[in-house]
Image 1: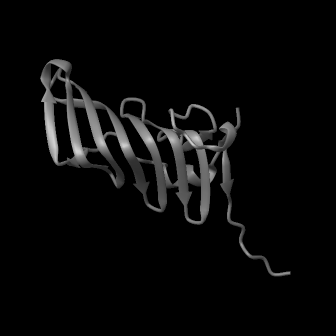
Image 2: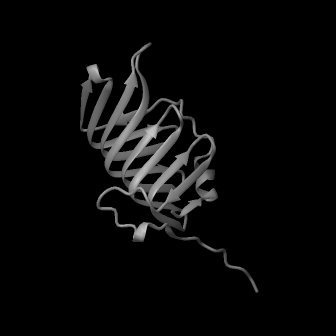
Image 3: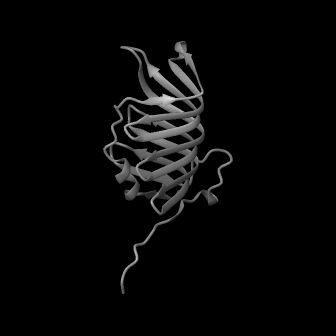
Length: 160
């Protein structure tokens, strides 16, 4: 299994505030109170402290001890996460707000500036400021090449 930690990715998501409020918009919302979740669908956008998540459908799981405390977002269909100059896309994503981890699964593409990485699974640790991408873990229909991480890093032009 190939693994690659990307320091350049970590820097743009370092110091993200996972405790900030999450604002959202969607075409429709279904409250499933007995299951402690909300299902958002139709061009969903969720924004937290400059981090934007877009998907066709997002399920927000919450605990209702003292009000509503969202602890997990599950996104499917055309997932895109952006922050500053970072853009990551995938088939699905899980944002665990309690552990400050975002996991993108299936056909993962990560762009930052002119750097590009592709793989099957990307884990962004918001607390540690570290991202790990690997070729495995892709969902059915994943098109990554043989379960490997591929990419291109830009190299500054040097004067000879």
